[in-house]
Each structure stands twice: as structure tokens, then as C-alpha cells.
Image (cartoon, rainbow, N blue to C red):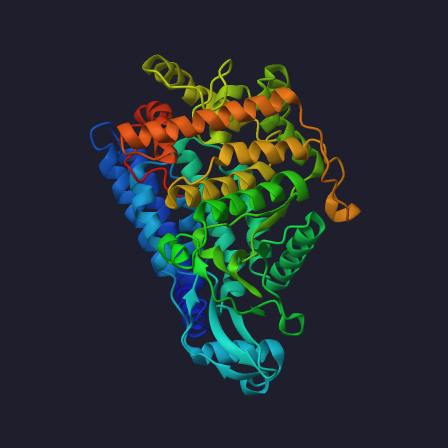
Length: 524
């Protein structure tokens, strides 16, 4: 027995030393993760009670954050995913996880050089005339450098960080373990979605797939005929699993509204273009960019006509091709909301294993929704909130139980919509996003074929008089509400709608011992 322990210890130390020498640090990272998982179990299953609930949430959230920082790589992306689920988790989780947005570490230029030469088989000087050693941006799995090709083209070079591929299998196993722990601690069926998350992350670390996604998105724009949205040109000859070279874009992040206005552009028109472009992806082409945060949406003067703007979409690593039937069903779902076709609405959500169509509609609209009342016209009362509080916990649990029916596409569509909503909010709630979504949904109900396969888009569509009337009423109410809120409360529409959503969610937070969400809880 003593000899066995001696050899085991020696083997363990040798493995740890090899792991550290190769920089993958899988053993160290896994040990960090296991310790964090055990702490979560201790905090929620032994220490947790009504009196110290928020202290426990704070402790656990901080521990997960520090684990993500220590482990780096995909763990930063996992933490950012938690931050995107702030409406389901206690406020401390969003407070800590949102800090990860700017915490991805950059790797040295020597390592960048090694990766470039490994992937291309050429020295960096053979490909580029110029190459900035300091990256202009660093994210969880990659960083971007500005460079100039031998032909004089200025390009953005996206380099995957070392060890991401080596660490992927181990990291996903640990992700599965943590999901299991959280499922046990919170009594929420998280593991059912783990396979979908892993599959999409696997695609995101292969830059050849990002290249393909960008080309598909470009083709969809050409078929639809949209001229005010641009996707950077990719250089296929330099594209590998860990390198992506694309056209350099001199533009302004959409969140920098003051800078955009200095160029003389109408920011309301720009926001209309942005929301329309993503609505077209969801309801028309069915090929959806699932990471449209402000850093991936740039505005620039249109080449050849500086008086016109052009919206530039970046980073197609996380995209999803919607099933055509789901796209049609989701289009009909949105149209039914406006036409108040409750029979059709119920039929669609039941097909997806959802029992409460009102609650689900509220989640999709990202505002309170009540049947029998038009969209945008409903003012939430205290009685409404009380009813929702009594039903919400059981309804959400019941909805999540039927994950075999719940369309996985919806997870990524909702991510897109929440980020787009957040962009609209940051820019001052410039446009009525719900009306724009509804109009494209109406077109989507009549676009039966997959346009990417048929290469044809039928722009002519029939819009019922009732639908147009309800859309007009909704737009009028939105405009009047905007004026009233600005005059009476100095508040924007998206802020007002978020406040009403907070009231809806307050009940479930209180039932789990959470604090009432703070003012940042519903920020993207």
C-alpha cells in the first residue's frame, strides 16, 4: 500500500509538472474548478438560510468570478454566459460576472508569431509588410491585431490563444460538472442545454466555421437586397482553424452615439437599420448572428458616399441556422401577438412544451404582456404582479421540465434579441423595436422556403388590414408613451418596460431568498 501511494504521488507530481511546463495547466484549472464546485455545494446546501441568503450569493458569485479569472480562456466565456442570465440568478452574480467583459488576458507577440507560423507554414514577414505587436482587442478565446498584407491591404488578424484547443475537452467536462452542481443547488434543469452549448462552443473555436458563417450571412444580405449593412471581406487563403484574416474596418461602435452624430448621421435611422437587419435574420433568412453586442456593431460612412451611413457587423463565430419550421412557427407566434389570435398563440407554445402563453409572450417581448390587451397598451397593476408572483415559480419549473419539446434554437434567438434590446436601450430607446420585429414576422409567415437554399426572396407579401391597424395603434401608443414618460418622469421607454419586467420577476426572486433586482439587473 505504501509503495502504491509513493508511486501514485510521484506520478501525480510528474503529471502536474508536465502540465505546467506545457502551459495548458489542465490539472491546476480542474483543481480550481472542483474546489469552486464544492464551495457552491457547501454554501447552498449547508450554510444557506433566509437571513444570510444575499451573503451566500455574494460569496459564491465572487468565488466563481475569481475561478474564471485564474483559469482564463473558456472560463471567461462561461462567466460572461452567467452574466447574460442575470434575470434568472441573484444580482451578485451579474455584479461579479459583468466584470469579466474586460478581463481577458492578451498573449505575448512571441506566442502570436509561433501560432501564425505553425498555422501557415510561413514566417510572419512573408505574409505581412506590417504587423502591430500590441493587440487592439483581446477576448476569451482570441485576440485581434492590425496588419498590412504584401498587396497593401490593411487587415484585422484574429489569432486564437494558445492551449484553447488542448483545454477544450477538459473545460467542457468541468462545465458539465458545474452545471450539475448548480442544477442540484438551484433545482433547475441546466444539463439539458449543456450539449447544445458545447456543440456551439466547439464551432466557435474553429475559425474556418466563422469564415463560413460570415460568407453565408453575406449571401443572405445579397439575396434580400440590403445595401446599408456590410460584412467585412475575409481572406480565404489565410483562413485556418486558429487564424482569421479580414478587411480592416475604421468605424465607430454603435454605443458611441455622440461620435456618430458628429458625422451627421441620423441615429434613429441607424437603430432602425440595426434592428431590421437582425429581424430579417430571425424571420426571413433564418441564419442568425447570436452575439450582437455593441463591440460587434460598427457604424461608418458608406464607401463612395460619405453622406450615407453603413452598419458593419463583426464576429460571426456564434451563429445558428434556424430550422425552417421553427422560423415559420416563431414568425406566426409574433404575428399572433399583434392580431391577438390567442388560439394560434396557445397552439404554438404548447407545441414547444410551454403551458403559460402569457408569461412566455412577456419573455419574448421583454415587456409585460397580457391577453385581451394590445401590445404596448397594457399598464401593469399591483394585482397583475401579485398573480404573476403566485404562478411564476411553478410555471417556469413546469416549462423547463419539458426540455425535450423546447426548441434549442430559441435559446440563441433570445440571446440575439436581448442583446439587440440592450443596444437600443443604451442608445436611448430610439425606435419601437417591437413593431419592427412584428413587421418582419408578418413577412416571415409568408416566406415558406429557405431563401439560402432557393436563392430567392419574395419581397411582396400580403399584410392584413387588421395587422396594419394594430401595428399603427401600437406605434401611436409607443409615441404617446415616449412623450409622456419624458415629460412626466424623464424616463425612456425601454427603461420603463424593464421596470415593469422587474416587477414581474420580483416574486420568483423573493421565493428563492434573492434581493429585489437592482437597477443593473436587466442590463445586457
